[in-house]
Image (cartoon, rainbow, N blue to C red; front, side, top):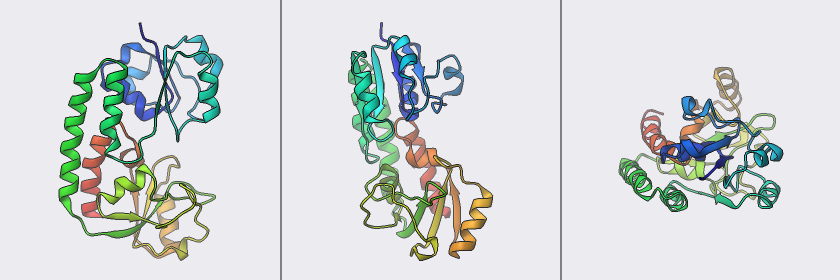
Length: 243
């Protein structure tokens, strides 16, 4: 019997979407979808501060990880007592296809994985056919300090499908700081709902600083891979069309 601990919110949702909720024995406090299913699943800390003692006590056969969301030292410690580490690193929307298939192979859920692939491909093809005009956008993920995303990220590649080209065009870091909002040559500013929960007061503040149109955007729809990426493409098509 498999015993799965997932340390990535979007991958916890994928585990459940593949019919594996009955084998899920642990999750992070940020794993919130599907809500009703996860109520009974014990928490083992956060994505960056995993309680290794709690994980060990659950005796998992598999732990699901992500290169960006979890620390390497956490993975190294887990490898000492977990038989199977399922490590993921999707960098763009199309990587979801291999992600679904990776989980399908690992957990013997190939038909369910292929069904997700078909749904994703249909949403992706529709997104590519939209051909929206290109615009330069500043996508903020944090405050104090202000932080954004480089083009070498899943978020940026998702936005680019809808003509939203993130700034800066070149960056040494994947999540660079923005020293002065007024100096960014963006046509539009987007404030996401996670990891920092921007709200209306932030929208007003940023609009005042930049003099640019500022919109709030659902961060789950731009940054979550797994099954939510399908809904994310559909959401972003509507969002970008009216932005």
